[in-house]
Image (tube, rainbow, N blue to C red):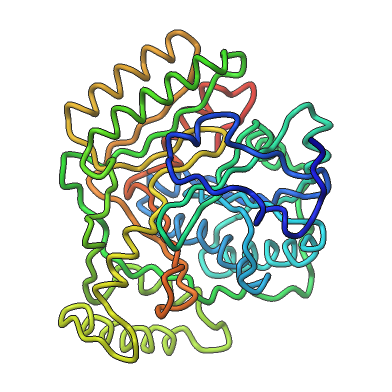
Length: 390
């Protein structure tokens, strides 16, 4: 069926409420030829994580999405948080402002953290010309939030091309800094309750039979479904909040650059101390219910996703972890999949909160000691002929 390009294309995609459907190829819809992908990732992210800068890495990854949301006035578009970067798609009418926002967040990452952010855009047509595809699905994480999933191999190919210097976004000589309003790093790291926090990436081999791949992915999800709340690392009551938040300086660096950093930090100390009072006492003021907000934050979290690979950050017991490792090692030996598993004590939550008065705030989950970037690095090393390592 021919796809008619429209700014409303993404809104027309049906929303899946069962994550098990996400691994099925027929759950995805191809993007129109004239849409484009935007991509960004940090250079040397593996080294940065080894140096203990994983929270900074996650903050920059979420900033890519925050900059796009604000550049497009909260308009809904598909995106995926990848830990050390992000991928998104938009119609051609949004390309200029999307590239401007990518350039701005690249400049911010360098000025604030001395980090190099690679950014690129590529049309879906060019991906089709390379013999690949990008298809999209929508998964409903909660009653208020749904997240995009990508399949078809085109996003992974585009990332590889970006890392070779292709399709890059030119730097503006007189460019400014991004609007990162809503980017937040306040929740306390989430400690495992069951054994370990696992960040898992499972990618199909290039020549694997699609039916065999789907069987393996379904087997993975069947094992994970036996965990409490499907392995969700955040307790049902929501994440915890301590003062001062560990990510306060990172959030300050994402604030208004016209205000001195010390003043931004002072304002956040005061703001987060007031928030602590609300969270500890359960006070309700002006329609804000701290208990409801906390519970919703956990429900909205993106602890499972698909971007040409199954990606999960789960709270896992030892028995299930051993079963997962055995299953994946056997499938890798049979050249069906490539996988990476990183074991950690904690998960991190990085957030985009347009307003605390609505339930559509988004929360990105990653492991606190390497997470997706480290797990994906193993996959990329094993598939080095197709996707190059960071």
